[in-house]
Image (cartoon, rainbow, N blue to C red; front, side, top):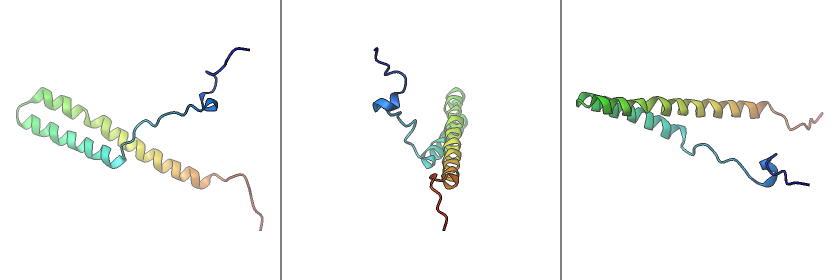
Length: 89
């Protein structure tokens, strides 16, 4: 029989890597920092550079919001999930 290692990699010890190890706090500071840097560059007359730097803020802040929402949803989900063992006292 042929090897079917591609079917379920989790069965073979291959675990997915986490997407990002940056905390929500770090992502928010990075997003706000790029907004401030873009504003300073715009005031200094570097309009194109300010546009590029400022455009990085939205993905950083969106990622921070997503991580925070997913963290709170996971915490709520863990509270509601039972282990399947019910004790009647």
